[in-house]
Image 1 (cartoon, protein in one colour):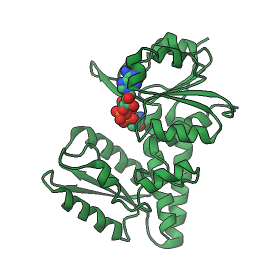
Image 2 (cartoon, rainbow, N blue to C red; image 1 turned 135 degrees about the horizontal axis):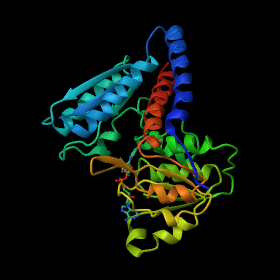
Image 3 (cartoon, rainbow, N blue to C red; image 1 turned 90 degrees about the vertical axis):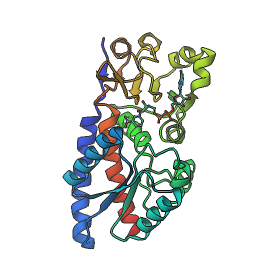
Image 4 (cartoon, rainbow, N blue to C red; image 1 turned 120 degrees about the vertical axis):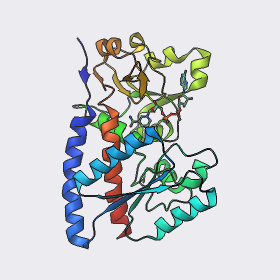
Length: 286
Ligand code: NAD
């Protein structure tokens, strides 16, 4: 029997309703509208799509949105000064720096300068550290989106399950491993070296929960998927003008109990979690 689709849109709708209600309540209570400020350095067609989607989602939910465009030629010091000004600006409650940044800017260094109270992507080391303690109020959006998708599976018991994450990035694989461990999920993280060793299929085949975040179309073959597994495909790849994930979807659908489509899976939830983080940041600042 074919698996069921785990659609981010459906889960996002419920969370959006809560955000809309809370944003309105906060505005009434404090007399200010929560605001997200997005900082873009230079022009980039990939980030334009995300910026448009962020702005539309924010406005639909009653969150103010401002795009601060800086010239691609600004120096790292000038960029840090711009971030520090936003940290002091009481009307800016959440800050997001659009990626990718030009080569002369060190993204990891910049993340240290965003106030942890306004860091709605949880890229500041302090916010990352809170995840280790299981105390984070603001979570990295995509990792949190994966957890929301898992929690949306009817009657799922995460305790004691075996999960495999493919991809160990700082925004997805690493924080997600910590979030799963916090739920007592036995978690294995695979990465490029696993792929090079040729042992990736062995790990994937054991996964009751499989999360793939690599950025290589069709890397995970459908017949590697354990029957009855929950598959979350984070990957976004453009192949012959179409957007596809990292998992061979049609074949994986035959084996999985639940699988996210690409597009329409993790993506719509990620931007929703970003908005939830803006409200969380706003509350922490009041
Ligand atoms: P990244 O690009 O920083 O890192 C890629 C990871 O894949 C690394 O851990 C690397 O070791 C691993 N890897 C590379 N080749 C491999 C192989 N052959 N076998 C096993 N592992 C291998 O990762 P990222 O920034 O987390 O992005 C991953 C994908 O997720 C991209 O396609 C990105 O566009 C997508 N993404 C989607 C969303 C969303 O909201 N849907 C959000 C963030 C990222």
